[in-house]
Length: 365
Ligand SMILES: [Ca+2]
Ligand SMILES: [Ca+2]
Image (cartoon, rainbow, N blue to C red; front, top):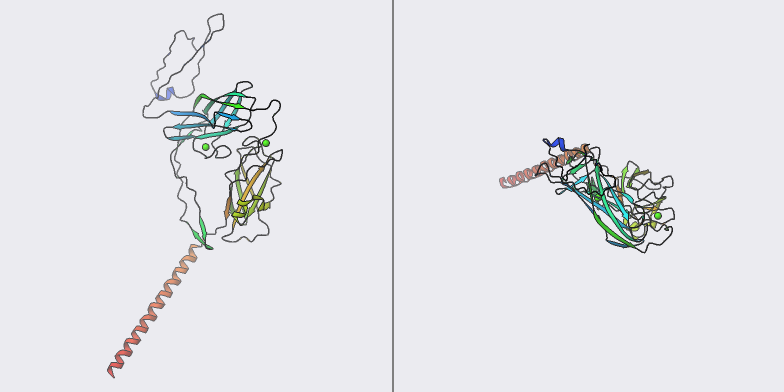
């Protein structure tokens, strides 16, 4: 690590691989007193045809009054494609108080609306006082986790549906292709965004934040059992652990949508909520319900925090027991139809022939 004496250092590389990776610099101070230093690094794309990886930090608002949470998010793209699999940290610096860090997630839960769209988000609730808060976002791909997502079909696949009581099956699920490109390791930092907070009370803050709404509840029949999965929410929106869950089910979707407490209670007392952002899986066998082909059950879930504040009811999840018709029974039905058709043709033929013969006989008389 040589000492820097000049004003500008230029590094030039022969191959692209030589330039790739993390670079460190050391600066020596040859003077006795401490010095103020400014450092600017300019880099150039190795291939002008490849667009750079860009990080853009945003806040949901530039001014907020307590206890309204602020959403912090970072958009990471290369060209028009989102960059996935990154470790994204927001560094929030209040005017007075210690620096807060937040892990921003692209998991489609809590403050994050869509999973794997390259937009990493989180609620910020940890206010230390009134005034200005600066935001810096650091993006890292350390163990080659970063992937470029190529545009693909986001449509949800359903194996079948029920119409007027009859089960109708959809064509088989199309094969999923891995339309992702590995991007190697890199870091990016972006800053320049700030927001202002007012009306923060002095002293210890009360628990004013309820758990965030669960937006990805999914239910599926596995035989007579129902398996449910969702991303855990926190005690305060998408931070920490909720204390417990209240799950309700019904055959009638309107009943649950009108008032979630209309539904039958699903016993979740043994389920201890996992930290916010973690995938929860819960299975149970519904009691006092006949489960047969075509049975539909709806589910709604609420998370409750340590001071009994309830989250908003989750999205409505639907479980449909669908047993696809046996293809062999289909071919049997086909054979039966063919036999009946042949019989009809034969009978018609005999009738036509008999009538013809009768007419001919009459003419002969
Ligand atoms: Ca997202
Ligand atoms: Ca709370």
